[in-house]
Length: 320
Ligand code: ADP
Ligand code: TRP
Image (cartoon, rainbow, N blue to C red):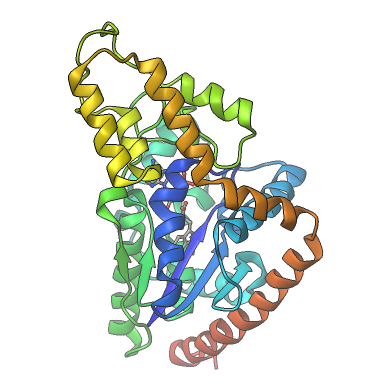
């Protein structure tokens, strides 16, 4: 089984990215042949500063390796090192119905948030379909908001197969439902664009500050606290043991403990959960040559797969 996923290098990663996409993807490393990449072509749809993009690519590479991506098991690379993706994206675009792309939420959301529209932003799902189909992926672990894009990839694969014969495997999205949406500081979905994130590798005081700024209701210290839709409890569930989570839940219900105390405990739990990864990240930061060579070796292996598939496609459509 081949497993593929990508993440945009568009800033520091947050707990939503980690629990929604990275951790499930990393857990799948042992289930088949995994290919994980840094979607830097996609990031060009929203980033206009070369130095920032370069920095973000490095950061996300460090984050992924620190979080447990094992280059011995997984092919890890930069999307832009694979020339076949651009060509395949064009070939898929010639078959992609406008209506299908017009229905994509992510494009509509980005425009609604004031991003300038561009052909690149509009055809983002076609480029993503090229990523998915180029490696004949079976399973695509992504957060819930990317599910529609995997369905577009499936639709385009079906269209190509109908037009040119069996060329592409049909991919399946793999969404871990229990972490489908990690809430942010204000209770809405955690997202860079809502400014409500908790960073993955913050230093101690910045992390403490973010956790302490989680919005809570105005219940008094004595009164029982609602366990429904509590950001503190939802985040705690991911970083604490089931027993500690249960204890916190009971203390919410019994009252007599203020939100400040719960936030401090949440901060400690997040800090400890990511401690080994933080240490690995600082070792990697002192060994950037290793990071670069890992990405270069990954690109070589990914290129071999994507190039072979592209040759098949070129020949099927009549370019060979
Ligand atoms: P952001 O919303 O901060 O811009 P991205 O859209 O770059 O994040 O998401 C990168 C990956 O992380 C995607 O697979 C996405 O589904 C997942 N993800 C992002 N935020 C969350 C969240 N709050 N809960 C679960 N998964 C998330
Ligand atoms: N669009 C994805 C995101 O924003 C990143 C991505 C690009 C991707 N190509 C992909 C994810 C292919 C899975 C498969 O998170």
